[in-house]
Length: 161
Image (tube, rainbow, N blue to C red; front, side, top):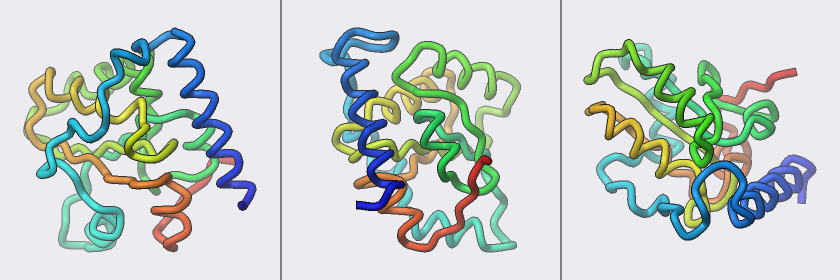
């Protein structure tokens, strides 16, 4: 296991334990699974990377709604770190960031902290954007984690130093 993946796994475990222990954010019982996001809202990593590479395709606002440590390690170039969707602070930052945007503007959100089936962040962020009336929200479907499904596939990556 690479250091990148080991750090991701530890971060995901810490996030899971924090939510399970009742730290800020929804209680584990209240956690809405990523599988609740409609299939038509999902975009696969390779398809999204190809659209970003196309000069003909307008670029959406790309927001990482996971944990800061993961964003610093590796993120999609041009994406912005918002904060964990499982925490009220992250959801408030998301609401603030999009407050002045047109409701039909293209937004892509992603997390990638852990396997899709366990992600505590993505459904909460998606639901918040839907509640605000955004109609063109896509969610990057990261099945395992950002390292496995984006970085290891050689897709464009940026890092904060």
